[in-house]
Amino acid sequence: MEHLSSVPPRRGLIIFLNGTSSSGKSSIAAELLRVLDEPYFHMSADMFHAIRSRREFPADRLDEILHRTWMGFHRAVAGMAAAGNNVIVDHVLSSDWRLTDCLALFDPRDVVLVGVRCPLAELERRERERGDRPGGLAARQSKQVHAHGVYDIECDTSRADAVECAQLIRDFLPGRPRPTAFERLRAHR
Image (cartoon, rainbow, N blue to C red):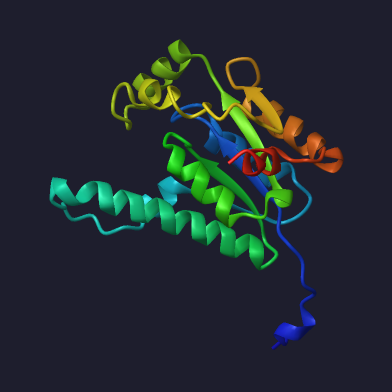
């Protein structure tokens, strides 16, 4: 068994995909796993919600449970990156506190913030087609999800498919500019 001291220290890169539900983040993440040379982990809030117990909880506890789930998700991502793992984050910054929490936890030099955009009419069509999301979820999220307005790179999934978006992001990584979007956002908060 290898000793921990034989693993060279490094910081992991976080590719942070932010967009509404049904915008195509998970599809882009799956393609990124395929096209990136380094090993990456795809981590999504949906994954964390899926591993929570399935029993019904009182409505007055739901907000607290969801809030703690998101906080745990952020800390799990931060822990993976701090251990030197590269992470693709599939996220919805539909509440300002989520961005604030991530800005406090992640090394801003190691985050590539990707805006995943899609026109509302197309989001609504995708929601109807999926059938597994509450109607109007993307519309409710779209009011806040891009409100911070700063990205390292953006893609529009109504104009480019997941493969094209993943290739665009992959090609952006080697020459990504500084300061990063996370550095600029942290400096303004």
